[in-house]
Image (tube, rainbow over all chains, first blue to last red; front, side):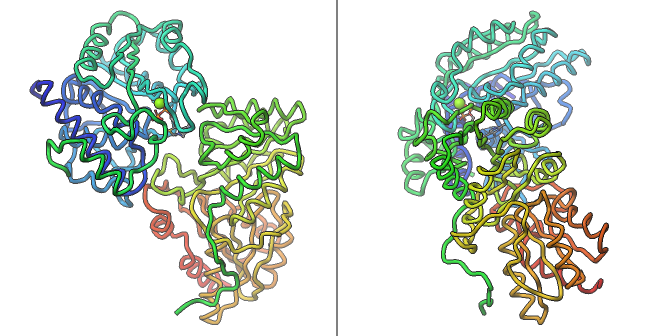
Length: 283
Length: 320
Ligand SMILES: Cc1ncc(C[n+]2csc(CCOP(=O)(O)OP(=O)(O)O)c2C)c(N)n1
Ligand SMILES: [Mg+2]
């Protein structure tokens, strides 16, 4: 894929946000908050960083692989997959409907291109990503494994089993990103179950940690991912703490857990879409 | 043309609200009742209890295994923990924690499992557990309960607070007819014959009891007399009630929002095989995962509604 300018990428972000809102609104179910906050990440990854082939192959040999561990961000992932050529953009309108390949949470069962393992039950993705990374090492394939996790998701013990394993085996061909939005279903993470010093935790587990403080600024996200890439291959797994805002891009959705899993009403959708320019054409 | 239903309703409500309301009342009755939840307080309707008894409620964050272990510890100290999350994360996710720390150690922990089965809807197969009854009923010491509507779920919640021992209480997300009385007495392990009949026995659990009620009326229109038995407790199973009914009718249908493999139907088959081999037809999910969709569309696609109970009843009758 040809490199695109920041302006072009920014346009894709806006469209992704429109897609997410329209998808969730159409079925009055799903999760708008985190995908809105991760739009810059998704677009930076799929349209700039990832060396990938939309002509999808399950084994991902000879390409970078991305895993979405926090599967409830499906609407955002489906949008970026469709917009980067994995399947027709039109298909986004089947999201969460019966007989669709676009399941509520990502699944391989219906064979949607771009997905390599089901997610939705939190805390399992990092382990899978580590296995895929080790498989690449065994194959002498020098491509990278990327994974996104939620910050609330880090409360699952399995994440820390995986964290320990990654450092022990020196899985240095993996870049994990945490959507550090400080929110989860029942409220802010500080109130639900405080994550305390995440940077220190990952460092203590033997990871190389970078912080992307402006996770909704495309330039910073791109720089962060570049930095992360430069740290691979040095014996340590790499963690990118991505500070985002849940619901970013829509004034009445930003910064609150209330939009974790609530769809907008007709009126709210119209209001939200008014704030987001249609740049690539709605599906 | 409307059906002449034996049980009707004026209101629909989710069974999880029956749990939430029962839980609050149990908390008021007994100061030893405590609550735990893994970042799904709103979904489980545990918020009112948390508000009234903040010091007796523990938000564990997204950490179900930890929640089960803590519950076992609280039970050691004489507390009666109600640990709530989605049915998938309350069973498969933490099976070994339940097996060792709760069931084998016989701790007075109430595992409260919401959003069970296909009727969870759009979230899809990752969340639609259809194997939980099987997993839980296989565990020695475990009592397994799947009530049918808001009122019965509330009554069951109050009953398990008074019962000593591990319990798995299963309920759901969708708004569902309230067709059983508010003042019902809930007897753990005692099946409830809701409708008398003589040609075929329908044994149903959870949301499928309503569908059985509808199926009974449909069958009656065709001159078939069906007996409807509400099996709210899957373990211990009321074998006596099952055998008594089948002795009269000579054939049976089981109906559940669960895999056929390992579910209520299998438990009934075991009972019949040992005592009175009679034709039994299963209404349940046939060895497949679910998918996203509306609850109604899913129940239809996977063959879990009144029409399918009618079909199964006729098949069972034809095999007599
Ligand atoms: C094992 C498991 N437990 C509970 C849930 C229900 N659940 C879905 S999303 C979520 C909150 C996740 O928080 P976070 O990772 O911070 O995501 P965000 O709210 O920021 O989108 C919970 C508890 C789940 N999907 N999986
Ligand atoms: Mg979060």
